[in-house]
Image 1 (cartoon, rainbow, N blue to C red):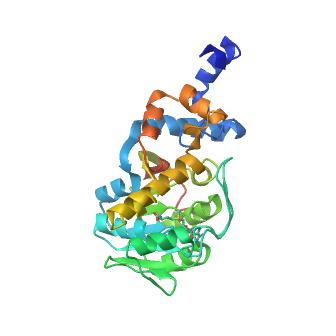
Image 2 (image 1 turned 180 degrees about the vertical axis):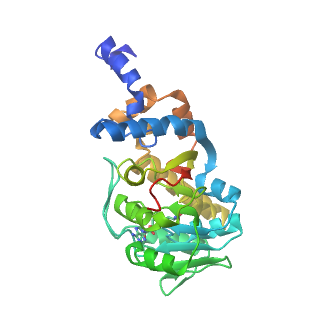
Image 3 (image 1 turned 120 degrees about the vertical axis):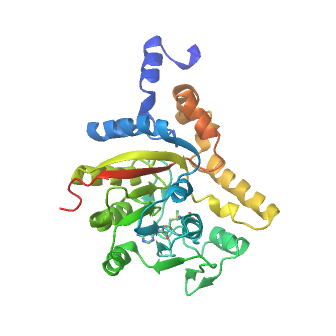
Length: 315
Ligand SMILES: C[S@@+](CC[C@H](N)C(=O)[O-])C[C@H]1O[C@@H](n2cnc3c(N)ncnc32)[C@H](O)[C@@H]1O
């Protein structure tokens, strides 16, 4: 496509630097970060490409879960991630949420700004899914619907530490879906004494580089533990549509989700020819990334890892 590049040098530079753009959003140019974080991201993407899975990262991990310990679902919304975790593991799952939305503004890389209070279960979108999936809300908390789940209402800044004080033992599975950098880092810090070798951490929005990935990177730098990536797959959020009973309604919810992602949201790089992201994606991305991203109806931002040594986590 010679008309796209001003000269051969520019073409070569673009090809060489294709790992400069994060595959999910094809938005963030990691050149904006300091050198050390850039190399962390590059290393991460190289390793994650070896661990692609076709399904949902959280459910994949839940189906493989072994060993005793707490299962925490941080960021519950209408409760399906928690219930599905309980279904898949056959164990009790603790879900944490304000149920009144995120507690700080969330700037999604250089894309959307999601304001504090968004993702409350009182929003129309949540209300429709609540109705269509048979969830009942009592005292502002979604029903368990027969599953072994316990919901803890409130900001994790207030609820997580007191909860852990009354529940001894290691954390076996830590599912992070609070979205923002601040809440994620706070939760990691609060749980740090309870991680052990073999603890599984799943981050629903890991490929947002100024959010969960950044929080994990800083946490890892501070405590010098070791980990290995296990899976890179679909977010759990879109499973909400799969829980809709009526086939017609389910179809409509899925169509709405695709519309939100591809047309309005962060998947629009696929078709907005006038944006740089379109060209980065179609001409700059590794072919395997293009296939992986296009194969998703939902979004592939979810990553899991396993702690393999504790470093200074217990210090
Ligand atoms: C993306 S939604 C969770 C989606 C859910 N895991 C699912 O699969 O349906 C994020 C949730 O995190 C909650 N949240 C964000 N920050 C929080 C915090 N610091 N404490 C408690 N809840 C928080 C919001 O209220 C929102 O319901």
